[in-house]
Length: 161
Image (cartoon, rainbow, N blue to C red; front, top):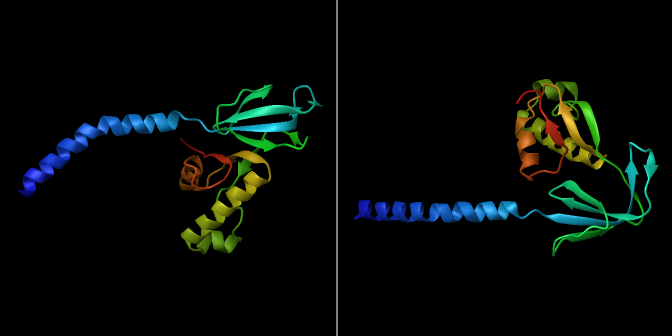
């Protein structure tokens, strides 16, 4: 009887697998949008700041500047005529060696060091750095957590991969 139930369960699981995969794919296709209203945009190529305008952000990337047409349900943030500029890139960053003191980084508990790295990743993003180039630290777990949205932090470009 147990064997029959397990076969029946496997049959139904296999039958539902394509449906679950398509539901997951359609959820991934829904790109969250945010509209920043009344912001001034810094143009680094021309060296100018625009007048108040709108910026459409889709999936954490700028999709349009100017008179934008967001999807229904898009979040809206008032800019208050503040200046919006591109994210900064730190080309020499040590993912897990920024916050801990030297002794902690070398001899300390790796779990605690990872927590410090996570806090520093968030602080780095809040300082305006949207991308960092890690130069040799074990950044892959923190990169994955940031990429999956588990932790707020700058995009990490690790030394390999």
